[in-house]
Amino acid sequence: MTAASEPARGAGVTAGSRGHRGDTRAKTSAAATFALVFGVAGLFSVLTAILAWLGLVLGIIGIILGIVGLKMARRPGVTGRGVSIGGLVLSILAVLIGLGLAAGITTFVNNENAVDRLQTQVDKLRDKLD
Image 1: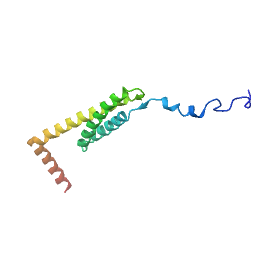
Image 2: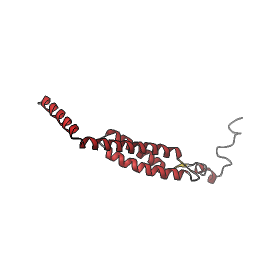
Image 3: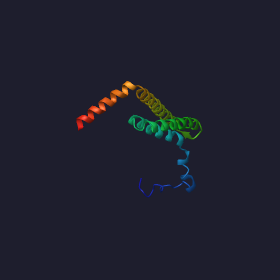
Image 4: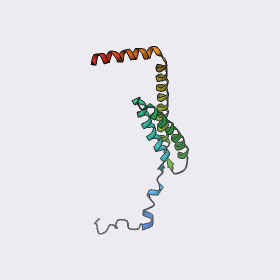
């Protein structure tokens, strides 16, 4: 077959029908995507220990968005169930680690012996620096 005998590209396809091809694809829920983003950010923040309070807040927001994303994924034409579950898992981990870290710090600070030992070690390190 020669190029002259082949139909031209797009021949037989009306201009209006070409643009609708992409509309049949399902869209990922925005809430599911944000749940994953907040879950990852919350987990990283909690693992730094300095920003644990921020990670706790981000984790709570991620849990809420994950639940909303799961509900939205039930709608026809909307995907994101797996993304929502991933965001929920990471957000729950961030919240649990953040709460555990907060409980550990609170217990440590309320224990006078532990604080005294820490102060002694800091004083020894200061003496070594001088």
